[in-house]
Amino acid sequence: GIQVEQSPPDLILQEGANSTLRCNFSDSVNNLQWFHQNPWGQLINLFYIPSGTKQNGRLSATTVATERYSLLYISSSQTTDSGVYFCAVEFHGSGNTGKLIFGQGTTLQVKP
Amino acid sequence: DVKVTQSSRYLVKRTGEKVFLECVQDMDHENMFWYRQDPGLGLRLIYFSYDVKMKEKGDIPEGYSVSREKKERFSLILESASTNQTSMYLCASRGLQETQYFGPGTRLLVL
Image 1 (cartoon, rainbow over the protein chains, first blue to last red):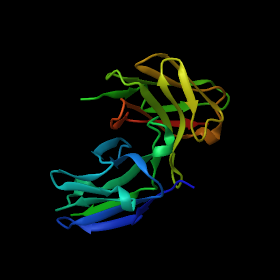
Image 2: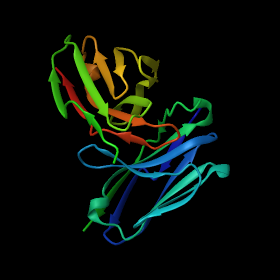
Image 3: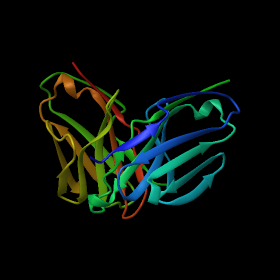
């Protein structure tokens, strides 16, 4: 079946460290997004990245659609980066409805 | 900036009550969505709408209904709330070929 798998499930970093989060998906995609869920539950858009590479400050993301994976890079991590990171995918078969399938998330804790 | 607002951040209801959760977006988006988020189960799609008065079931529609009378507003209705509907409810909207934007969420407790 259609699957979105994220790794690692949990990650603990010291402030200033770099990290890479991975998202594997099982089929061709129209859309892939990365979100950060803050401690209050708000899902914040990080990247809309069905293919290619994008950068925004200390964060960057790369999606290799042909190999069905996406990576989120966090450099020089800060305590405010803590939270849950979700990858969400809209598969080709969804008929452009915008229906997203979410991975289970990576819980990141950045220690001061 | 896109803004998606939800009517309540926290809500406490009794079993059997009818519950309305409202979501409003200000970007003239066609598509709107309701998800629920539960520990260990992640985010799951309840219903979505791609136009006024149009709706489609998501993955877990049982026990819920929706209403979209105006483009900017998408309501989730729990006809008779049950304790297993205690959850975090998240609304989202999206234009065509665009990023999906989420509201702040409503934490619902059903006693």
